[in-house]
Image 1 (spheres, rainbow, N blue to C red):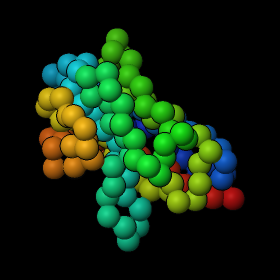
Image 2: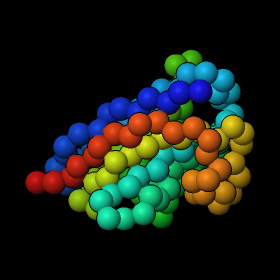
Image 3: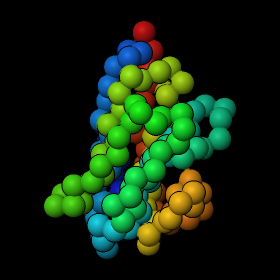
Length: 124
């Protein structure tokens, strides 16, 4: 299984970006794919996850970020709107080899495969 994250860049506060996570290998459309981020000097944190059609979000991004999945392309997207400087980080996508339920999506150890990360910088 391989994951390729892309779509990061420099954006002004209030702007938008769409991240993509292209998966290859055995990744059924019900398997969980999540987005995590890590800012300099901070711990990695869960951002969002889609698992068996259910979506999950960290409180800090609810209402601003939307996760979706194109099964035909085996790609998961993270639409990020109303970006803030605090959203600046390296964003990683990862897949668990199964379905994640409830708050388990937030636990990085449940994800077996990780992409290489894409940098998001929100700054004026």
